[in-house]
Image (tube, rainbow, N blue to C red; front, side):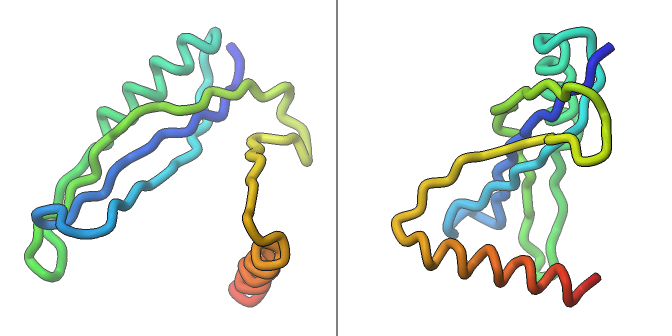
Length: 111
């Protein structure tokens, strides 16, 4: 068995859906024999955990599974092992760096 990091995408629809599109991207750790089996297992998880509930405004909220978009093998579970990466192109490098520092500062405050 091998370990994989998979990305599952869910669409969040509130009420009649008349709002900006919202998506939840989840990274899930999967133990499977191969990449195809990891994909199938992640897909099954996505289908199984779809949910609907009524929010505080009495609107129906649906978490609708969209798809599995990534399956990445993990080459050994060791301290500091890379689990996921994403290359991001930003139109304004300084703004992106400022955002990253801001997010980091919020984590430091809350921990």
